Each structure stands twice: as structure tokens, then as C-alpha cells.
Length: 330
Image (cartoon, one colour):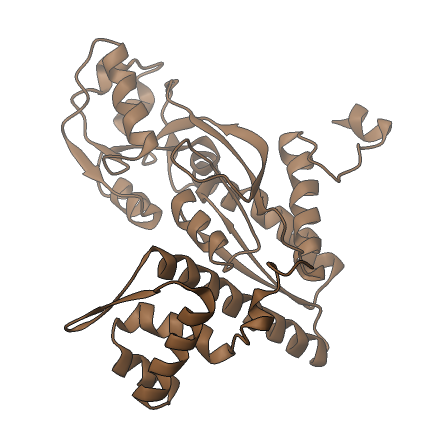
């Protein structure tokens, strides 16, 4: 360990200083932050001043009615939150072991792999370790990446786009994501045979909000056919609302094919007979580099990779190739 890497030892960095940074970021006021920490305001001010002196920079601008973090402050707040989250997770692991449980892991996924890959992987992990506590979050890639950066997730299955900061991330592609048009069972268009986009311009659609990748590609698909995109729209990403709305109307929605097939398989909806040329980018397994996974998280990671091989036929790092008889059977 170099003298630069252990500066916090020389600076005698205190846990209360990390908690103070977090409280100041949330409260924006030294008095309220002191109340959160249950210390006096002078004591909180001294904690902050000692930390600024140790770093040699100003972490907060002192304003007439509060405090605002500087760039240095933003960096320290981000790292303080991650350090506190990591310490909380360490405590939870110790408590789980004391209680005879294997440990816990947090995993996130976007919708389609959340309905296909995640259940298979979790079933595999739980079969091996019934005491494993697994927390699942289904969100957009943007939300999941933010939680991964904050150490609120151990791993995620989602997408990386050009706008995302990829530093500190490891991405292993799993599969591309085709999309399908989904309608209620008994929809009149289901009896019309193979459809074209021309026949779907003047009908109602349920689509993702403007600015999303799928919405952009859905609109582009019509434009490439020389058509105006449909104007009768409902915008949402809430699948429960979508399926309920479909049952009460003749609207069409555009969703990942895995999602459409799931609902069709349960009789909730049906796939419209049309090929939509607006597939999504590939999704993949995303973890943070330089972070040592807990034994519980390592079990979940291996289960995800094994399930990805079984479902999508892709072999990720650390997963052995299937034996010849399995390949022949597949």
C-alpha cells in the first residue's frame, strides 16, 4: 500500500465524517445534518473542517441558507455513500452467517431477461443454497447502472449505450432482443393474416415514452417505410397497465418478444402476425471491475452464466462447455 492509497489513515478519517458527508448531501444544511448525526452543530462543523484540511480542498460552498457541494465534495460524497453501503453489506453478511444463512446478493435486470434468465438462474442458485437471500430489482438499464455504481446491486443484466460511463464496468454480451407487437386475445387483426405496417398506422398503440431507444426505433421503422408514425398513442413502461389496457381495448403494444411470448403462453395476450424491424441492442451481464464479490454474489453470478448458456446458447467466462451428449441433445 502506497502513502497515497492510505491517506485516510494519516488523516484519521472518522466514520462520522463519512456519515456527515452523506447527511450534508441529503439535507444541504449543517444544522439539520448535525441533527441527523445527533451531534452539535459546532461538532459537525469541526468534523467537516478537519476533513477539508486533510484533503486540502473545500468540499462545500457555504451559502447564506445552506451548503452546496463543490466538485471535490461531489466526488467524496459518492465514495462515502459507496463505502457506507459496503460496510452495511459486510455487517449483513456477518449477521446472516451468525443466523446460519449463506448470505445475500442483490441482482437487477431489465424486463425481458428479468422474466426469462433471472428466474432460471435464481432457481439454480436456490437449489444449491436454500439459505441464500436474493433481492431482485427489475428496472431500466439507466436505473440499474446507477444502483450498481452506488453499490446497491452486486450485478445486473442490462444494456450499455454510448452515453453510459463504462469505466469500472465489465460487460459480457448475452443476446440481442427482438420485439413483437402484442394485442389482446380475440383482437380483430389476429384473423387478418400476415400484416404490414401500412395497416397499423391508423390504430392505437401503447409505446414507451419519447426519448427511449425502443420508441425511437419504433418511429424510425415507420419512417423507413415512408409512413408517418401512428398518432393515437398511450405512453408507458408499466407492463401491468399495458396488459390491463389491452384487455379493454383494441390497442397494440410493442414489447420484447420474450415478454410477449410469456403473456401469450399464459393466455393474457397474443402476438400480432407481423415482423417488426426495430429490435433492441444486445443485453449482457454487467459487474464492476476491481470489486471482490461475496461468496453469495459469486454463487449468483455463476448461476446467471450457466442459465445464460442453457437459455441463449452463449458461454460466458468461467462457465465450462457442456459435454458432447448435451450438445447433441440440444
